[in-house]
Structures are given as structure tokens and as C-alpha cells.
Image 1 (cartoon, rainbow, N blue to C red):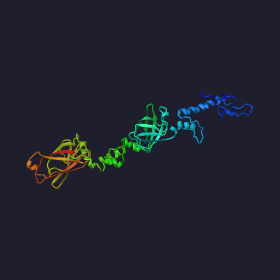
Image 2: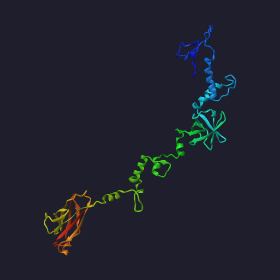
Image 3: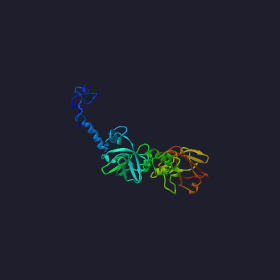
Image 4: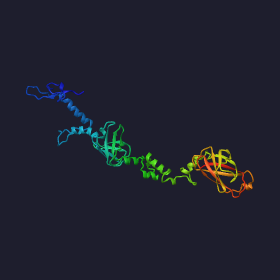
Length: 351
């Protein structure tokens, strides 16, 4: 425990906030000054002696001054400078060198160096101020101009490569850490040195599915690939019967029945009526019960003879047109003035 001069005799304690632990008093000639004794000055000398010992500075026996140097300042700065200054890290003869007294470092004491060399095959570090050596171990292969944290261990000195804004790119490249890609590099898709990002990946995926590059990635007869819109329609229709209505109407005699005649129907065909006669043909309006998705459908028509097959064949090819999602009209025209007895089978197919 250090001793306070306040406990000595003849100490001025009139301003304790200004002079901590009191102020030394001059002797006015009446023997009232602060004594020059071990109690007052012993701890002060011992403090400097401890600094000299801790930094292993040998007393040269000369007064501290500009000519002889300041050993007490050397000891004080020596202890503090390792943490207050960035020290130079060099290499000579395969040995790393730091301007410190290596032997005086405490275990786990650390400081920062700036390297003037690339780490090579060095395995030893030397303190150039005391020429003491110690084994060196490394966490990261530091380069010239980079900062290194140095930690003194019980058996070795550890060098840790520090990363900051000046060397971040070099470190990530050296350690093969992937960096974010640019959009042009992502578009090309050939680099293994960068990492995709959600934004760039989305852009490329869009281009290859529905954008300018899609033709290079859609499936063909020769290769697998992404799906085209045509293929999507086909897949949507798998398992969905596009024939929505099947049935017939019967008893038709082309040009032989009056407008308004209703024919016998079956299946999904719920009504068939002669709406108009045009020259030698009839316009028949047919209705079915299951609405189509839209008018983009087709009628598959098949003519069945129910009488004289020779007479029933005397008609021209059938034509039709959609009226709505539940109705269409069919036109039949005969080529000879003979009587027919026709049944018209109808499949309504969604396209």
C-alpha cells in the first residue's frame, strides 16, 4: 500500500481539491517545512524503481537529462507505447521483428502492428530492443500494409490479421469468400467467384422463363427445359374432358319442313329448331345444357341415315357458327329434291 504525504508532518492541506493529499511546505527557517525523509519520498522512488524493473531498464548511473537520456521516461513510455502506438512489423533473415523488449511482455498483453512485409515462412519473432526471440503462430496470412494484432502468450506470440475497409476485398478474395454478383455477371451465369442475390436471381429467372432469354430455356423435342404457354394449356387440360356436351337431334328432312319445326333431341342437346330456310337449305338452331367456357369451341357433326341411305346422302357438307356458350346454328343444304330422314350427332368441344 502506498503512503499518503498528508499523513506526514508539516503538510499544507488548505486546498485539498487543488492539491490532492496536501501540498509540500517550504521551511520558513522555523523548522516548519515538510521533512525530507523516507516517508515522504520513499514511495515515489520505489514507483520509478518498479517501472525500471518492469521494463527491464538497467540504471546507467547518470543523471537523466538531454545529454544522457531519460531512463525513467524510457521505462514509462516503454510500458505504455506498446498499446498507444502502432508498431512496425518487419522481417529479416526469415525472422519477424518488432521494436519492443519482447522478454518484458506479460502473458496476454497485446498491441497493434502495421506490417511492412507479406507473411512468408517465418516461424519466429524477435523483439529488436532486447534481441529476445519467441515462437510465432498466425491466424490469417497478413500482407504488406495491413494491420496485425499481436498477443503475447506463455509459449508463443500470436499474430492475427485484422480486416478493415482497406483490405476487406483482398481478404475475402484470398479466403474465397463469395461476394455479391452484378446483374451482367448474373445474366451470363458463368462465374463461380461471386454469389447470387435475391434481386439478380429474380431478374435472371424472369428473363429465362418469360423474357428475352426464354427461347434458350424452353423445352423442345430434343431437350428438357422450362414450360411454354402452349405446354401449360395442354397440362391444364390433362384430366379435363374438353368434350362438354354430347347428343343429337333427329327427324330432319332438309327443305321438307316448315320454319319453327322442333326436332327430337337426346343427351346434352336440349333443343333443335328450324329457324330459317335459305334457298335449298335449312338453318337449325341447337341448344345444349352445359355452358362452354367461351365461344372458342367447335362442333363435331356426324350425319346418320335413318331412311333411304341413297336419298339421305344427297346433301352438301354441313357448316355451323357459334351463337353463345350454349347455342349454335347449323346449315344443311340438299342437292336433289328428295326426302331425307336424318339424325345429326353433335359433340361440343372446348378449344
